[in-house]
Image (cartoon, rainbow, N blue to C red; front, side, top):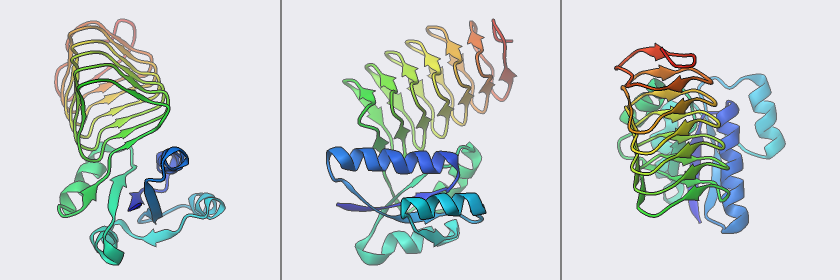
Length: 212
């Protein structure tokens, strides 16, 4: 099995631990060596202790941790895209794992770049490109011929229709819908429950039905 370190002990970090456990329950793949976090809360540490997962230290230790013991891959399980980008940029020699929950569907000709995390219930149909360090959370659907830019995040139950382009560092909120063929600009946010019916420019937030 390949050794694996997880960056982040927050809620999504612990969800990623469960993705790793689910993968290993089907096919033993990852030897989880622990979690790195600069300032884990007492509650987070208690949860890690309950799971029998070690806190390995600060994220600044990642390159050293990944190089020790014959090498390890890592994944950044932190929601903030700028933090993910900073960690990835600061650790260029780290091997970034791709994690796909066994209850997710990844269809033909779907490309998942380094560091991508696909959670339980996600459905990615066909001819889709998912960029580096993208998070596709629980029960998200992504339609055919779509592109999800690096460091972006699709929150639970987001619906990305076919031929949609989501720019880098974008956030699509829970239960939001993006209609066919549209573009969500880089560093933009689509609010929870929004219905996007027109292109969204870079760096803005839209919300509501229709989103504006």
